[in-house]
Image 1 (cartoon, rainbow, N blue to C red):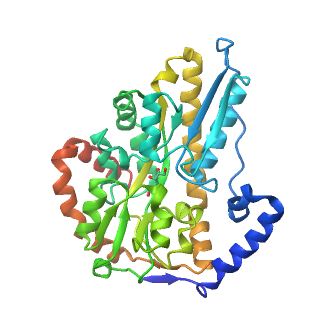
Image 2 (cartoon, rainbow, N blue to C red):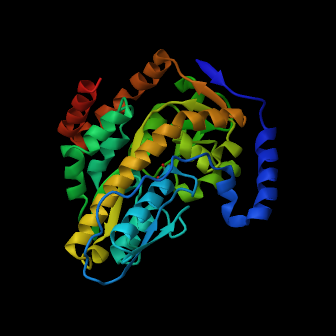
Image 3 (spheres, protein in one colour):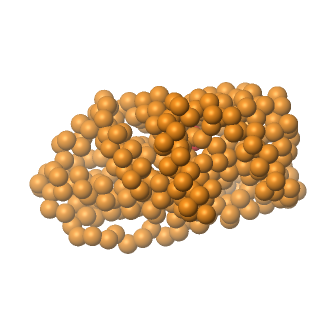
Length: 362
Ligand code: KDG
């Protein structure tokens, strides 16, 4: 086990004072921008202008993560592609930090036709689409390329078709990423260290099973409520990718982190069916193309920044525990029963086909 850290606790305070001073100059809106890490530049728009039917369309796209997230960066590229290739006939309004609602509220708004697009995690949606639960199985994807192979392959494309129902049209995948545990109590390097820790999870039965099986005390909660719950010690810990821990400033209320990589979470790109049916076919194809390019670029942003962000969190005082392969195996073995519990509900064939994809990609 290796621990990465630097003198704790003063840094976040001094940094936020500097940010506040700077924000005074730049204006409140750019507060998160001051702290943001250099994002890869937005790629050029590929593809010709699409004819359309001469009508104008306004598209509101709401996400749950902040302006400093890879998800928002992906959305900026989506806007650039759609507005350029529709010659301005489709205008994209971007909303972040659950401004128009959290994942489940956004999905309901799509079904009601009051919102046009969103990209929730698949985890909170397993009640609506049980097949998504396969993505919540621990240590399913040994590396991101395996996730790409599955999501961009037959399984992922079939799931998009299956999820194009109930007032929704599913048009693409992007990356939330590999999840890491953080907490405010103590370093964690083995399941026994989790005893008595209240861990917030997404609203998802497998994630509850995972942390219960490891010996923690899990509680489901919307992402929109998480920072306050950590700050007020309603919960002791949570788990999210490094880039989300940084962009949502969890490191300001969490001292300890463990690099568990215990689950890979995808985002699914959804359109309101009511809005979709109003679009001419070539604009529908434009949204599909843009969603694919957004997903590929967002994966690149998320992966190219992962290690850099982890290092910045350590530099800013977070005590990060990196597990040895033997220590990871202890967590994996302890979680094998979760596979047994969920095999029939999710479907053994789906799990086996993904595990095959994983082993053939080794
Ligand atoms: O809108 C943000 C969500 O997609 C959220 O699910 C992110 O990983 C997440 C979490 O922990 O809730």
